[in-house]
Image 1 (cartoon, rainbow, N blue to C red):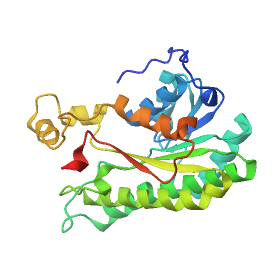
Image 2 (cartoon, rainbow, N blue to C red):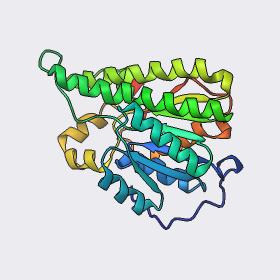
Image 3 (cartoon, rainbow, N blue to C red):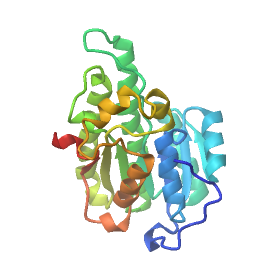
Image 4 (cartoon, rainbow, N blue to C red):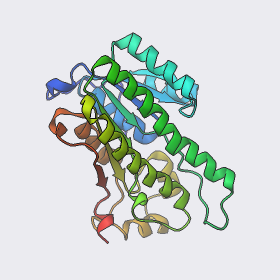
Length: 261
């Protein structure tokens, strides 16, 4: 997907989206950029958060949004980020927990404990840390906000060699339900989007068009293709918006039907 920073807000922008402040973690990656672009097209103010200051600054400049460098596993740094964003914009309306480690793989009997620990720290504890900080802010401000976590269908359908990542995403689904039930009283909705494989620039490089690897993945999907970033972002926008006002605790599969087989 190519996102243009000059894209103007959509004429069809929904009233609830016009003045929201949206924080997207892992914003420098392909899915994060796509999600950010979808929110800006609705007229939202978007803040990209990522661990690499230079990369996230470049992504934000490309999209015409704000950037902040933060390690989501550092609770003090996350709290400071939330405080600063709230001071700059008044409040945070939407959080998208997109940050995660996907590049570390290994079979159960071969994966180093340190590698699994990294995945757990970023994908589970990082998601928890940001969710906790933003939920505290929303509750204190009386904001009936929305949190959308990026999970994976791998949390429900294992693939050999990817179990560390997939088990962390199963935990994200559980965290989604935990947060949803406890935050409902504050009017804060918490949901997840669970993609199958998504054709980010990184995945395209590793599985080019016509490659046996891409064909093998596509053969597992009833709709016979891998997802584009543009397939994922609308689901996130929907769950964060007024059209999903009575939906919470859901992990929405966006997988071309892969969980059916």
